[in-house]
Image 1 (spheres, rainbow, N blue to C red):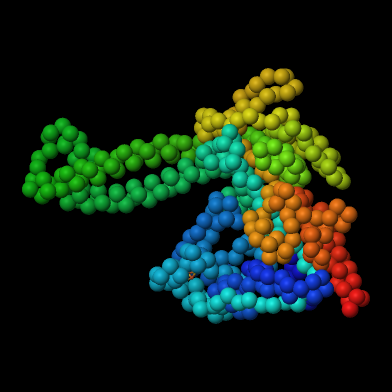
Image 2: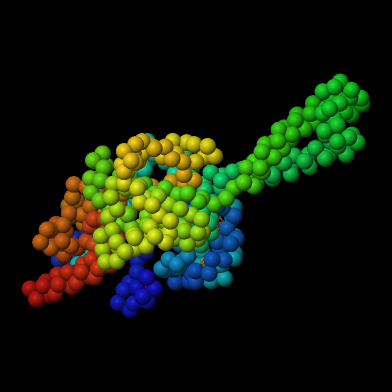
Length: 451
Ligand SMILES: Cc1cc2nc3c(=O)[nH]c(=O)nc-3n(C[C@H](O)[C@H](O)[C@H](O)COP(=O)(O)OP(=O)(O)OC[C@H]3O[C@@H](n4cnc5c(N)ncnc54)[C@H](O)[C@@H]3O)c2cc1C
Ligand code: SF4
Ligand code: SF4
């Protein structure tokens, strides 16, 4: 990415959208909308000082909602360009409130709340579509209970958990346990506040709240005029404090017992090779499940993983060897099975119900964490971009291509590569990108020769 950012012949137009394409191969006019970032790209150094002071937390979609970012942000730390952007749906200024601290903090004077979007016209000889894919929404398979069981997550979420810069700094804390710890932290704050309120009554009336409650319930309270005025409020607060304190004790016991996930299940083909959704194989998910299980084991040698699939498709140079190494050295068991259902077990453990095809019996097995390898789906907005480009999509919603020239779309001079073409891994996407670039050059040369 850095090489692309620095290349003298490449102009990066991030945070921009193609709005129109007219003309023919060799001579297209592309209309591109450069969206307003409210941060001046020529001035921003990407230092992140604005992020530190911004008071507005926003759920971070890059971390799949398992962490927060700020209203001024960059999508991820290594993004090119490093220019930040302001999220107008959340920024206090755009919500009509007082703020602007980021502008005061930015030494480069890059924040510009008055920036406007801009449409530019480019004369281009060819177009390469590389809009990628979206992960399939596993909520569409209700029997896997992705929406209701905290510890059923997608492989993309698991990628973020495994990352040192992710929400758990690479430690495999389960979402249910993280919720528990967050609830405990919130309760501690609430209790600290209510303890202060109780302390005021205790000081005023020279009695602990505990003794006050005992005296009140045993009808032995000596009511002064002052105490009579406060008694009802004090009692309500003291009772509420006690019930929250009991809850905290229970939460603390559970939180002390929390460890990282040790027993992990991966379920393959969630939405792929499934006639209800996508009949095709998503190509890369068997390998990313093995990769994630190996990395989980590298993080913690006590981790063991079971990968449930109809078959493991390790197709590629060195892939089968990688699969075998995972089984031999990283405590991975490959289980031939299409999991039927996931239900809630004890301690928020997801319980898998599946047929063990080797023993020919139905098994119910609890895991600490379940990772769903979701299908590769066409990216949101594919139809819009296809309409803008004037090209067709195939029956699954990927860009339609010519069997003889597999990177050619249905319009001359427009090519496609990567997962916009069909599901594929990174090496194949990169190889296709080079081929698409070569096809683009051919189209330009052909039109030059003709003119
Ligand atoms: C959990 C998981 C783990 C994986 N791990 C691996 C791995 O370890 N190794 C491996 O080889 N592969 C892995 N893959 C597969 C890998 O993600 C894909 O092969 C790769 O991302 C495909 O690259 P791409 O450039 O085609 O698409 P993408 O990476 O999806 O990039 C497309 C880009 O286009 C942008 N875009 C979309 N629409 C528009 C639009 N209208 N205008 C402008 N921009 C647009 C998107 O924002 C995105 O930045 C994994 C996949 C998953 C789901
Ligand atoms: S906007 Fe200013 S403070 Fe924020 S990253 Fe850019 S240069 Fe740094
Ligand atoms: S003006 Fe907006 S982006 Fe800047 S600090 Fe305030 S809330 Fe954050």
